Length: 224
Image (cartoon, rainbow, N blue to C red):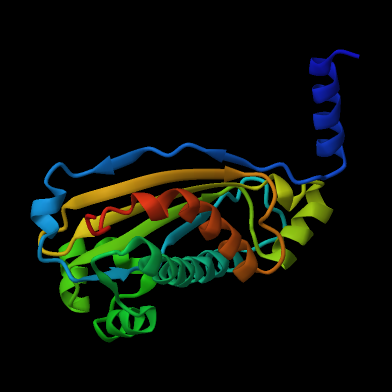
């Protein structure tokens, strides 16, 4: 058997057998040409709840209320996991800004009447003023199917597809707090295994994969 045919055969066996196959796509990145000048005085960055969207085309026997709750829960979990990752990387990569505690961020948003699912109705400079920070990290997550174990298992039984074929597209932005200008962004795509178990574990796996690419490219690193 030729090597090419053997590889194709092994791939088919892995897919049929449900073995997780992970693919990580390269990211598109933007950095403002005026980043250094615009952020010279920056000291604090807040991380907002992410906007999560789950593709409902193949979902059965799940209400929109359940989907909305799952999306909101995951959006908050992404916020917390990304905050934790930034804190972990700050020591190694020497970011020159501090990250606002997400509990404080969420409390200030609630106090101002800004609900997580209505942040799109406010400008970035408005939100930054409420939070008292110099810049904002926000993002969107598009999923081909649910990541929660219970919901994913229900869909597997109903439709015959497995959560290990999940595709996730993550877009992360950094905006200037003064005028809301886009300072930096990054796109990341994952497909394959690693997103099983509880919602928290699934989001943790996704953010860990994302930060393999993002951490060293986050532009607030101190110059050596």
